[in-house]
Each structure stands twice: as structure tokens, then as C-alpha cells.
Image 1 (cartoon, rainbow, N blue to C red):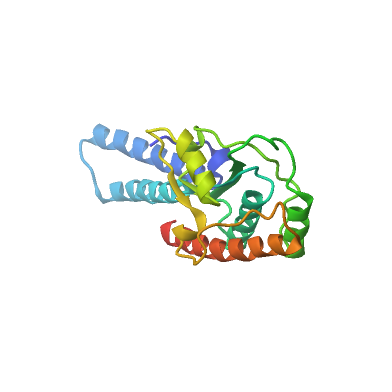
Image 2: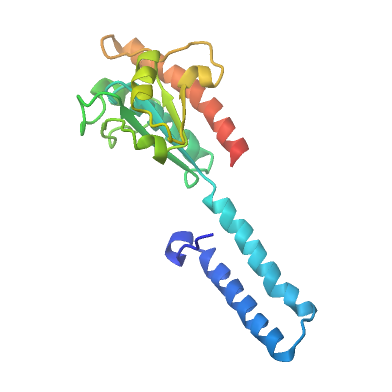
Length: 214
């Protein structure tokens, strides 16, 4: 197992390094006197406890939400799920991102109507910027969730054979009634509210899965 620095692991790396040092020192002592005694269990147990803690901290989930332009549905999915994860105290355990299968809006903020609708429910999407989904995402993420069939097909077209990510339609993946999250871009405010309703329900189901797997 690769050991990380104290700056990355905080309170865990220093005790882990100390436990390893105690084990090394005791091993030298045992070789010097030619025998082991009961005290050998103390540094070994400390090391074992630290390694268990390290394994827990390294266990995480990386989720990517994908729509067409990454300015309406997928940034909303990212913002809503990010809020749910933070409320659950799991923001250090889950990496969340969003992307579009098209590059039309790369570098742009979400649609102003998307930002406004989300803000009414307490979600801040203003800092998000659009990007295009790439083949490398299948190596970087564990779960890639498409908003509709069209974008699922677009993702399959760039999916590498050795990609590790699970690729699925977001709503059916969690047994929800609707099959697709409709694109609200060409409609009125009610379309953005409907998208939020769907994504809040889906986020709740996804969060339950995250809780059971971490």
C-alpha cells in the first residue's frame, strides 16, 4: 500500500508513521536479544489499526453526471447531489462532476434559468463551468450517469474497452418511474422545476447507495 504524506491524510499519516517506527524499533530489539515477548503486540496492533483507518479513508466514490451541453440537467444533478452529500457529511468521500457530450458551451456557466431555479431551492450552481465528456472519464470515475438515451449512446461511442466506470441512465439506475430527465432548454420555468424534482428524488436514491457502500 502506498503511504501518503501527513499533509494529505491529516491525523492518520503521523500515527501511521509512528506505528511503523515502533514496529521497526521493536524488531531490531528482538533481533538483538534473540527473542520476542508479549510487548511485541502493542506496536503491531497500533500499525494494524492505522492501516484499517487508512483503507477506510482511501475508499471513495467518483460520480459523473452527463447531459448534452452541460448547462442545464447535468450541472443541476451535480449541484443537487453535491448538496446532499455535504449534508450527509460525506463530501470528503465522494467526488462529483458533470459534463456534456457536446462541446458547444465549454467553459461557460450553466443556463441562467438553471442557476435561478436551483438557487430558489438552496443550490448554488454559479461556480460551475461546462466541459465535454472524454474517454478518460471512464478511467477517472466509478459511475457515469446519463440524463437520457441519446447521451447514453454518445457516451457509449467514446467508452474505451478497458474503462472501469459503470455507465447507466440515471433515473432507471435507481428504479425511478421516468426513464429520462427531459431537457428544459427550450421550455419555460416549469421545465426547470420538473428537472429539479426528478434530480432531488434521484439524488436521494444515489445517496442511500453511497452510504451503504462506503
